[in-house]
Length: 333
Image (tube, rainbow, N blue to C red):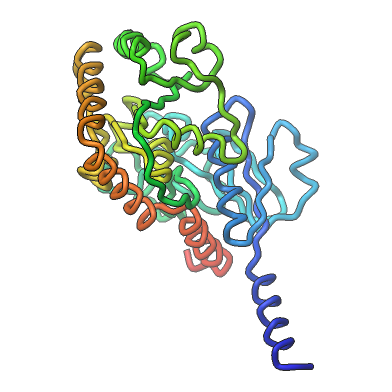
């Protein structure tokens, strides 16, 4: 055999040995988690892995495959019997912890835990999970696969209102969004229920698969990120901040501690503790500033994108998970 063929064979064997096949457990009513699952699937493809998004209501389908490991992205003790199982805990934490701050018994048998709240901002007096030697855990964010930086015209404001959590029912945010509905720059997406609420600016649902979300974000140029009160209480990021930074959008965001700590002044902030009119006025002022200072606004977008690539690439997070998985197998944890 020629040296070139031997080299090709060695490379082929190395790539095959590095390939992983993982399962991602979801359920139809957990839209954010399904979206994250498809982001993970895309990132896996970028690093030569295969990932299956699994609806756990279909138990038979779950047992047809052999996986290196499975990640459960939803509340519930769903486990695959033939491999290591990891539970992702990013939000809402009340599904996983009792009133004394301890992990519910039904979640204590996982091989490892992928947790967002391992940070200085988290109140360990309320959540005792990360102080216990009983659990093996690693840092885990609902982040995004690599997206190229593209300069764009930040003309429209993209937002997906949540259908769960305190912001959905909060009259203050309803009033704020009604004021935004009258603005020609506003673009609401998401559940079809919002078509009746915002008939002038509602632009439809977005597919979880493919690049539809990123195309819509990029077309708008500006993204409004609003976290739930629980996100802000514990300094937890939503996936939207990573999506916005990944596609080089100008970001308008509430004063979430995680965003402020990691993205700093690359983001334009609003104080959501204020009245609905005040929140609207802050957003309006930011949109006017963006229009009048486009070069500076795009510089912020570029810096946010650079921070995302440096710290939060989903591909990098998956490779760290592989290291974590190997340590679990070798009983290092």
